[in-house]
Length: 206
Image (tube, rainbow, N blue to C red; front, side, top):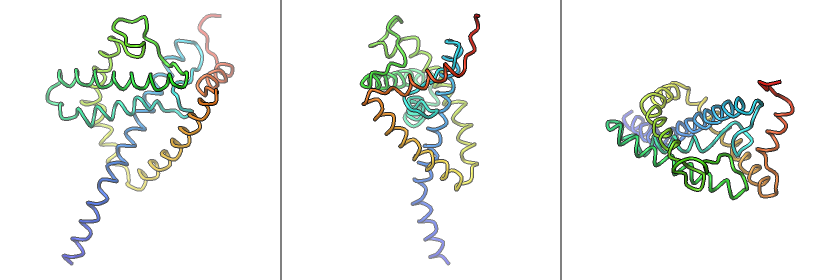
């Protein structure tokens, strides 16, 4: 019996990293979707019609997912030092935003431009947003991620695996299609925004 129990313990320990990766990927999906939703709502209200945000076809802005996970994984141990956490998170997330902007520019895609703002670098980052990302990171560490972590932990393992692997397959396909389309001169972002703008409009002025 002791050998059986020991074997089960060893198997459990081997599976633990996989479970952690599944949980992290679900966190990535949640933050990517939240970022996409926030940007889509803001830009749609600003322009008066539905605006598709993000490089990918699906409802995700990966830069939010990547940035959020990096803050949680790298800076989580600064939780007892709020000001240091704020500074490091502001710099880290701004670096992610800068690299994302440079990457997208290679496909002739410009989703944001801060060229007219104070302290901007190549128009991809600016002082105002750096401060904003730092503040949002504090909310992430102290409020949002602990709640999301509890929700994910309460999910059945089988359900998490189904969600993770299904989303991973869809995301991989989306990345391939989006990159291929961009390399061949088809901007999915512009195309979908034009279709949505023709189909749905809620202009405030007649």
